[in-house]
Image (cartoon, rainbow, N blue to C red; front, top):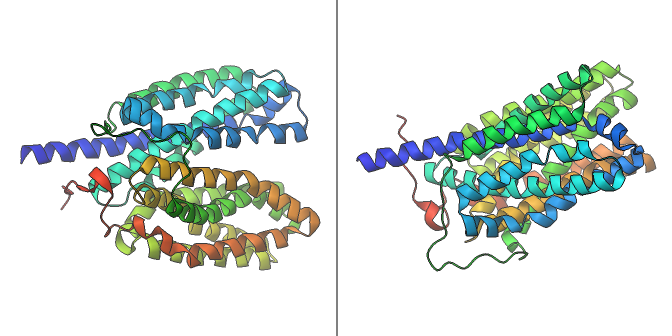
Length: 403
């Protein structure tokens, strides 16, 4: 009995630890995003050159993500995550040090590569903890990422308001976040490969099941990227609102997603991944219709709020389903992550290009159409439902000590 209690405590501690790692990961992103204007001025790049440079994080992440499984296999999950999260937090300083376009692109490539590898490692451990608890936690973990991003962006906003040098700001942020991230990793699960287990291939294609799951994630991340980057523009230019109200729309969308992710695990536990995503798809489609048909700012803001509510839990559930879709969770998660990163990369430019050729209304009609895919193809996430057995050693769930 004492052994069971010990396992319960270990897994519960690992849950909080990996949640802290998610928050640290998000805080790095928020810290970087708020200082992009300073970085642009320091590197003396034009808006077009900045757009080119900002494609390099996704490129670095896409190329490096498949390496995460091999690193975890060689060093163990705990040590791998400890090293990768430290590389990610420390890479925050690179973009602000860049004096020109070339060095900015190189810095952002490394920044994205370390982000992607840490992303895969922490999601794989999150899925393992979820399996052992036998209840959904992935939505809450991604909610912690959103909360971390909000904290990081708030600190960055204060730093920018007082005109601080981003090199100093990012050096201090990197030091604090590295300490917090490495400390949190001391309590994550210390998974080791089975004796005689072959290491995963470095650049193997993800399994077919992961590609189908990634397609659902693609739809959700496309809607997220479009809404984050274009919601304020939509209200400002399409509905002629004030700049303050337009900015509030984007903030409201972000907060809606964060709250929905933190609260989403209870919904998933009650209704299952498939039904949750189908209902989420319906909400996202309704939100898209409100945006497209809006003739008043309040209607469009309600539409963006519904969109955020509808897509919030989809990506966490995609990672959870990928982690149970085959014998190599890291490989499947890397495949899904690569697809979703690609979607996040192309969404803002695709919306802008279509808006240039037609209008923003048509652009968000496309977003609404893609949201239909969430409801239509939710069945591919069946591996994420709690009533299905987990794959591999993670299938042995630790009893929930709560009454």
